[in-house]
Image (tube, rainbow, N blue to C red; front, side):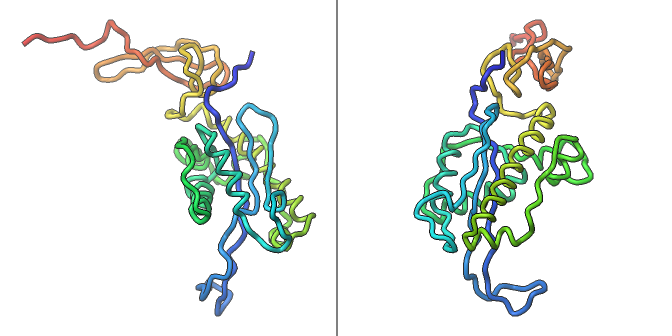
Length: 255
């Protein structure tokens, strides 16, 4: 029987609007004046081990006026999810998603959500492997688990900013598929993450996926201790006993 993790693990992805500026030229233009800052148009999310993928856009929340972009209510909704989560997962989250979200929270005068751990699947892929490309779409194809949807180009972003229903529908569908693909990529990479937050505080379960069974497979050796090593038969990840083998504990010396 599948066991629900003790940790609340949130997978999410945001879609943002472009900067609107004045510029003297098109190529490598330096903005003269900022007219409209980047905003979060919508975000998709799911809780790990729950099937439903949800999405919220500016057009879903009051007071929405088509063509007038204001992400305050969207950011509030995302803040609530972050505040509930123990772990948040995003692709390129450390460099983009998390920083954009936090900057928008600051803009709207919000306090930080409760502390959480962040897992960036792009950094995980770069740390433990050397894929030809670490983009989410390319990782999905390399790992044979899926790919992103077509966006329809910049016209979709323009349509959302203008309040067009068809564009909002297309953007949200694209956003949800990103989260579906993110989860599959994360699950493929998870067994390789050696510092993954423990999913369950149970000695007989895998600290990565929260399941099992766990099979003993040798020892993890340090300079002064050895710890029994286990492999999860569900996800394939390795872990070790938190307690050292008593037979190899350092003796107490008397001066």
